[in-house]
Length: 556
Image 1 (tube, rainbow, N blue to C red):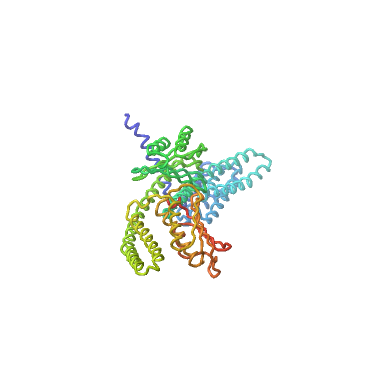
Image 2 (image 1 turned 90 degrees about the horizontal axis):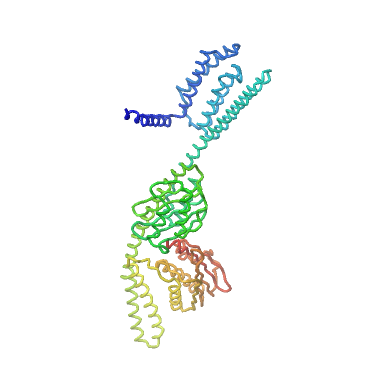
């Protein structure tokens, strides 16, 4: 006996699922046509079983119902092929409203039983056009209601109560149906935006990509503040991104915290098994964990949705603050968003690793080419200069200077080759020391006075990035001496936000009036590659070149 009893709810639930699937798979146009036919069929049955008052219009009512029944059958057998939300359907619903209004007018006006069929227009228009359809349908029905009700009140028998009650009923039905229409429109828009998840930003820097991703996720769920924390399973690297429109704060946590501290903070704040709305106590725990991760006072909201993600290499969680939707919808959307962000992080990591492999192979090939060609040529040049110094003592001093320059270039190329053959090509070096030593080399190379100033404290950057900065200074100094005939060059560098600002000021002839004022082609190409900005301005005398390089973004 217990088996069938306990099996009934499961059977009933399966039947409800089947009915729901059938309704959702139905053509809305055909469903509305079927509803119209059923409405008029029951109206014919009702008036045949119990004819309505007054009998004066009995024949007219029968003719009208017969005509409308035929119209409904035709619409059912040959439904419209237009889109369900096409404006052309408006005429059929206006026609439905007029027919039902005429039936009510001919059958005792406000007390007519046909008033219960008027909401059919309201429901059909809501199905087609959502909240706007519900409001427009209510407007039509209220017009019909007052067109029938006011003459009925003025004929001597006051029926104000019926007019008020029926009017309130239509307004209440509009409110309820309008809610479902608005909810459906909002869900459709969210799903549309979710389906347009951006893919192109993954080709840019991590900060730009994350900013674009959070902007899109915020537009989907209606949140203006999103926090993402993730870490690598195999290493101690962990990152925290806090997006608060329109800015993104991205920081690496490994330098400040140990792996155990990061794991404890993340596991104490998030449950990666499922998405959920955090309770007040959990919000406080998350706020405390984020404070330990270096992002204080970020959770001033009481409505916070948390969702975790875990992949082959990365794991973490996403926090969405004050999403502009109901909690059950926010939970479902946050789980999708977290899963997608986790997948995109994995994809970006794979792209970065592949790019590193390609760059490493290219650097090895370039290093080998430099070793086999330029370095050997410089060695031969150095030997010949040494021999010339022995033959002509009068020019020995000048030749020795040239030989020193060649040897210095040999040393730099050899170090470049060794560094790029090494797997640890991103060894961090002191920026100020490297740039100052490079300024001394430029002074000897071009035989001009080169002064370098560093404004700021100690700073470490990857060697490859410092090499790019040195090449920028080399190109700018070369232009000042070769094209501007400068006798002295002032180089300066300072940090501004997440970028290094390099300034090259010379005492040469200034900007050539025949040029376009944008600087040399090679310097512009190198700045474009680094994602920086360059500007030129005339001095008295000379020229000032300002170069801004986003080093924090490039080093991330």
